[in-house]
Length: 410
Image (cartoon, rainbow, N blue to C red; front, side, top):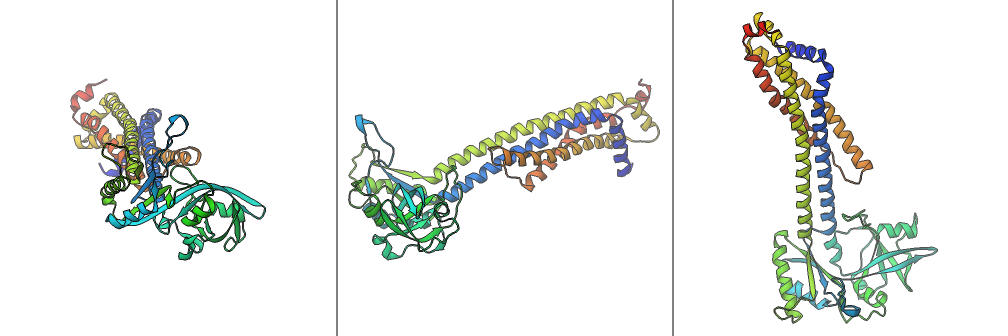
């Protein structure tokens, strides 16, 4: 039999019992749709993690001061004690190889005022390398001049702060007030949007470190040269663990911490945090894919069961076909074509439903979803493989029937 005749005969057979064929393909439809939705959600989540990495910096270490003790001996969080200073940062830069960037920082919150507009935001007092470590670029205006780091009253705004204070007006060159201190806007940061933890990364104000110490810290009584944190950019990601160990050893030595005593600082490796979250997401994606694959296997078993029933019901038809000259190969191709048609039709409908489902999850759900052409091609391949794998045994059984016995069947 020619291929066109095989397909035409298979289509005619399926139309003869269309309701059973539709119910048989339902398992494949659900399985394929589940594969597309689950894998798309997994890839969308992974994309969010990649966004988190780009926002935090993958070759980065953050150093915080130790935890202080409040009233009644209650321990505060990391960074609540001012145990770090600029001399520590310079020592790390000078004594540890592999350091590409380093910046001490101070931070706090304030109300920013321009004309009748005001906005509450977080400020950061930083050194020049801070922009490279955090991947910030200037969208308009310019960065700080070297002289600004000696206490100049200049400020760079995040896009959210600029929009809330100035709207459609030009911000560069204008004067804003932070607390009681006037600052000149010299630049606006390029927008980063929402961060990996849902925070608005553009709701930020940046000033030089010494300016923050003199003008914004006020009467907080910081020790001379103290910083609340030190950010370190490492040249090669492979050196992160080594550099972290060297920093910890150097700071213990500089802070005269004896063996067995608790560190008065903490070092956070962003890469380790992200790697842990990435691994958890990968395992979750595998779990979701496995659940979806089970649905597809169930659909394939349904095809096999229905095809076996069909062989039993059509034994006399098979005998007649063999009697008029059809060989075992023709019979096998006939039943295999029917199984493939059921699987392909179910796969096509499953792809449509899966794509629509992934789009619905992305638009209306709280989970990110990312459609990929490779996922759709993979689903189509699964559909073809399901028809071949689960349709072969019934087709083989039909082709091995004895023509005489088949004709005797009632």
